[in-house]
Length: 339
Image (cartoon, rainbow, N blue to C red):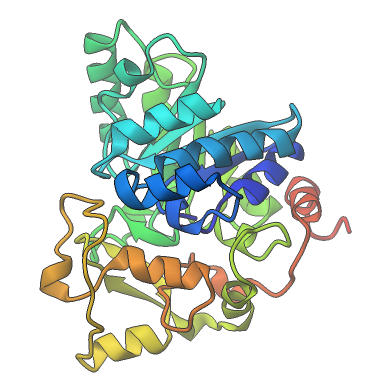
C-alpha cells in the first residue's frame, strides 16, 4: 500500500469504520492531492524532497475524516534514509500509531519519547521479534511494542523472503503466526496482527484460531471507492488473472510481487528508460546498476500510467468488485454471504 496508494481518504475511511487505517509515508510529497500553500510548494521543491510536510497534512486530514473513530496509523520504512524526519512528521500530524517495516526500528522508542502513540513493528519471524524486544527493553526503559505485524510471503509489494522461502511451508503465514504469538506471549500481552494474503472473513478467523488478534489487508482496499489511486490502477486489479501476477527483483535488492505489464515486459527485453535519482530514498538501492527507479514507477502506477509498477498480493486476481470501504469492512466482519 506504499508510494501513493494509501493516503488520507482511504486511511481515514477505514478508521471511520472502526479499523486501523494506515497511511504510507513514502512518496506522499509527490502523490498528495491536498491543497498546499505557495510557500510549502516552493519548500517541497527546494528542501523537502521527501514530503515530510505532506505526511503531517495527510495524517491530519485522515484524522479529520475518521472523526474520532478507529485508529489512524502511519507506515514508515526503517530503511528509508529520512526515517527520523518522517517519524517526527507522523507525531506532529497526531498519528495514533506508527507502523514500521523494512527493517527493525531499534531506535523508534527513543525518537517517540513519551508521546502517546502506539508503536507497531513488522516482522517476518519470531526471532526478529525476540531481537527487537531485547533491544527495546535494554535501551528504551523497558518499552515493548504495542502490537506486532507478522507478514507472510503472499503479500504484495516488497517481500522479506528469499525466492526459496516464498513457497516453503515453513515460511507461510499459518506457520509463522503461532511462532510469533508464542514469542509475543513471552514478553507480555503483545497483540499479533497477521498480514500477507488475507482475503476474507474466513481467512481472518483461520488466523484468529492460530492466535492472531487482528489481520492486515492491502490488496482488497485498493479496489475501494475511497482508495486514492487513479481509476486506471484499480482497473488493472480488476482485469488481472492469476497468470498476470509474478515476482521480480527490484533496485532495493528484494523480491516484489507485481502485475505483469508493459514496464516489466520492457525490462525482460533489456529495455530500460533513462532516469535520474531524485530521492536516494533507500541506502541499499542499486538503481544505477539495474537502470530504473522503483519510486518513480510506483508513483507512475498511482497515477494510472501504463508504465507503472503495480504491486499486488497473491489474491489480486480475485478482485472483481469496486466497493465502498464501509461495505468491504462489513463483509470482512460478517462474511461475504451476509450481504
